Image (cartoon, rainbow, N blue to C red; front, top):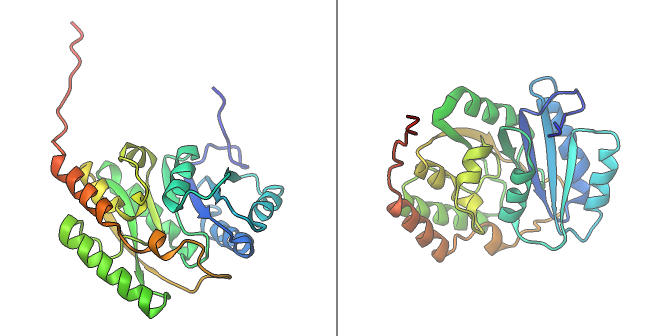
Amino acid sequence: MSVHLTSSGTTPAVSIVVPVRNEADNVAPLIAEIAAALDGRWAYEIVYVDDGSTDATPQRIAAIRQSRENLRQIRHTASSGQSAAVRSGVRAARGAIVATLDGDGQNNPAFLPDLIAAVEQGGARVGLAAGQRLGRKDTGFKKIQSRIANKVRDAILRDGTRDSGCGLKAFRRDVYLSLPYFDGLHRFMPALVRREGFEIAFVDVTDRPRLSGVSNYGFFDRLWIGIMDLVGVWWLIRRKKSTPIATEIAS
């Protein structure tokens, strides 16, 4: 079996997954910020998942790959949504810990070390470190909609999360891959990770305006929690049974 190495010759401990769609002008500055936050701290890779961009995003990523060996590029032939892009990135990731952030620059990579450290220091009991945004930079209308959605979600799921939609997260790759996948999974990760018996670490992060351009994931895709999704996650939590202790009998 071949071993995939970073440019420093070591297997990455951390994979940074960035889902993007039509974010050409934000690619280079965001990669530079990720590198500034992580260089010298972990062996890491950056996995950009281009979710069917129709602008110069794939060309910008490819150009930077020529000089950055720990940058990887995955391409969806057609846009499949943010959850699908995150999943493609996590499945391709080589690190045992995966961190995610949005590709528009609103999530500051300076908080990545805090999130990754929270997972590492939590040991086996912590499955997810979830960013909780302060000073939201969205429009007033989006803030209201998000606040209502979070209150409804918390009232039903009681996951203790005030901001489930923050793109800044760090988690154990194997924990994520054990979760039931559906479109919108990224909005329900705290509740589903708790369902698997893990604790959540919450990390306050500061929101900022996007680096360039406008939102490329629509209102319903990004903010509004579908009633069917909410009911489905509630059902999954209610139907969860304790995992039995299984012992192999050798003789």
